[in-house]
Length: 292
Image (cartoon, rainbow, N blue to C red; front, side, top):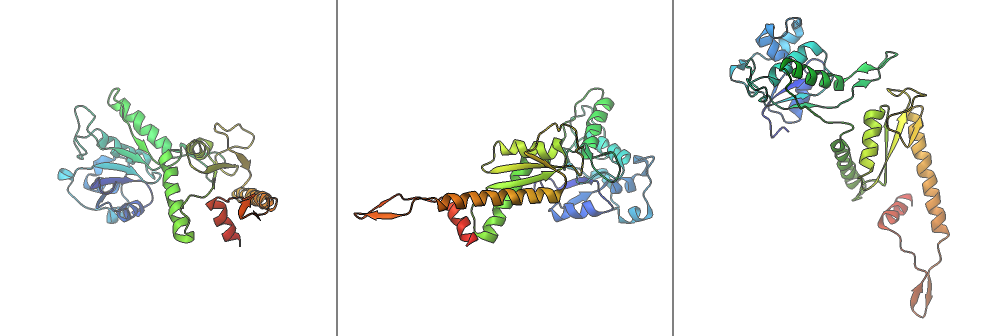
């Protein structure tokens, strides 16, 4: 993305954190909503920048700036203001601030880093998340443009690309740390949201070369006693219980493999020929080496 888009708008998070993160990803020209408000305070009539925001926001002339993409990196701290700016750019002529397209199909692409509509916080009920903002953006665009459809993009769970990325990282780590050229036989994925965590894990497991084992915990969005829309392999109380479940399951599987190896026929020679030969797979051989 950083090589594809030069000037981008980054939304969400506290202060300048998301700008810093975007720059660390390689984006060369990062704009924040604060920059746009600083250039034109009338952009958001009900939001005024604090002295600190005014100091940190960049002063620039947007008359010749083209926003090539919009990234919502983290949950918005000002839904109304951020919504206004996103809609302005979605309706703009090619991402130019302050312009208005006649066709409403010239705006920059919009990406959300996840699609969770709700999440669990300190409140007794779930709180609205980035997925809710995404829905509001698409709905508002359709209302303002009298029926035009805005297609946005979401990364994160339950999108398959997120699990593919995690698999690549696991492969790289195993290669670098243990000289193993394959993903782990089982990946235990722990989550508290059936609609994203469990849904994504189960979907990816259908196509993965290894086993992705979904575990639902009761400490988040999922409410104990209800029927989850997407069923996990197992449901436990806490993350610690999930870890213990995975350890216990792996220990039982290891015991079973050792029992199988113990009961294997012994190697014998008969007239120079080997009978009852048992060939182990490279994965089992490597595991036995690590255990030794």
